[in-house]
Amino acid sequence: MTLPRITLVPVGGTIESAPPDRLQLAGYVELGILLEPGQLVAGVAPELARIASVDEAPFRRLAAHAITDDDLANLADEIRGRFARDDADGAVVTHGTNTLEETAWLLHLVVPGDRPVVVAGAMRPATTLSADGPLNLVNAVRVAASDEARGLGALVLLDDTIHGARSATKSDTMRVAAFRDGAAGPLGWVDGDGRIVLAVRPARGAALRGTFAHVDLRALPRVDIVLTYQGADGALVDAAVAAGARGIVSAGTGAGYPTPQEQAALEAAAKRGVTVVQATRVGGGRVPPVPKLAERGWVAAGDLTPWKARVLLRLALAAGITDREALQRLFDD
Image (cartoon, rainbow, N blue to C red; front, side, top):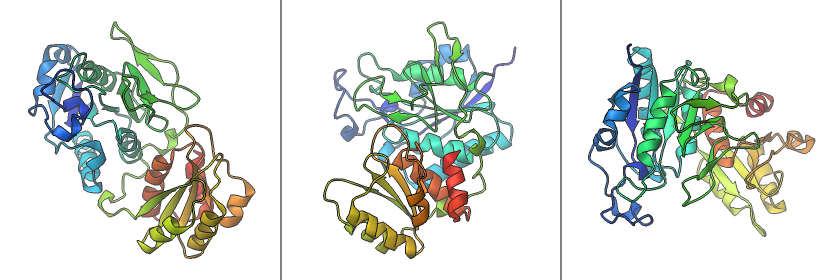
């Protein structure tokens, strides 16, 4: 039987970090020591060979917090090119966990079609005791090669758990089970016998899969995030406008409340043509589209985290979507 063909794009991160001390589970990022290209795959080659034919694409490896728009454009081009040429039945991206959720959400929005894209990472370096990366890679390939994952868009895989790209977020700096989902929980799991068990199929964000495939990812507009805290004035809002931001995501308190000074600055920014999206700094729940937001011309982020709201807003603005009601429908999806 012909095995599924999976493209692997290694972007770097903890999953490929290689500190010399097997107990160095913190502070290894600063060392900048990575496995040799192909070494991660070579370590699990016998296991992968039973699941899929894996072709590793060359890619610039770097820390997740150092990824640029050009890197993301190159990553999307690599995956879309492979799919367009019918060179792969699915794709796996190994990635640092710090911004993994943003990359996964972006790929969900810009990679069309129903072939799975699974973004995997690790919380322990490859050369340390009980490294979680090798099994995460094997399970990511399992998911990308499966019929169950087709049509789900981009997925996130760590700690045997399958997350949807829209809802997955990193919630712990150290634990292996660092990622969680929204109120609905994870989509499913890869069990110890290798079986993929899907509990739910994501409804939120499904219609947006691949919607922005035509957008030039190397020319995205500037969108800044302004975090609210007690006593915050409008200086950061004003600075974002002065820097040329076309959009601002306000990470407000509670269900989306900036301070009065920030509100005044955001209202002034909106009058100057800056699109304002109101999100929350809280780790769960929604910002509902209450009438006051509509009166100000602002968009409610719903349950999207501020950084995922920023990804969606940049793509929407680049696609020429500036009407508040049209933007609100995107965020409501």
